[in-house]
Length: 118
Image: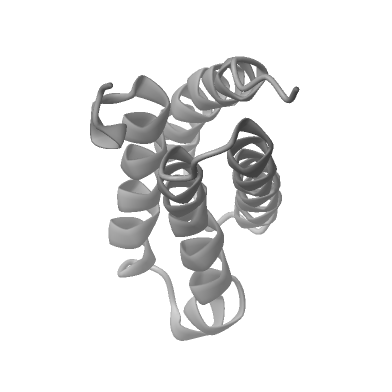
């Protein structure tokens, strides 16, 4: 069995959370205190839930935790939309985020579908 950190879906979720982590430092205090800490937690939770689910024994347990990961993914996208609307994230960075979000979303859904509940 592969290690969780070898999975594309996990690697992409880590990449997304790392980009958010480092972008946070360039945001003003208002943004950091309102949206910043929450988006860091939701983005970090995507990979953390993939890892937790990957370590579970039964398919129903794994699937339930992977669905939490998808919830965190949707929350992260919500925070990103707010940051874009509020002009905190510039056009160049929007494209960077969009590429990762698009790829991660499809891979996360496919990954969840591979976990069959019996």
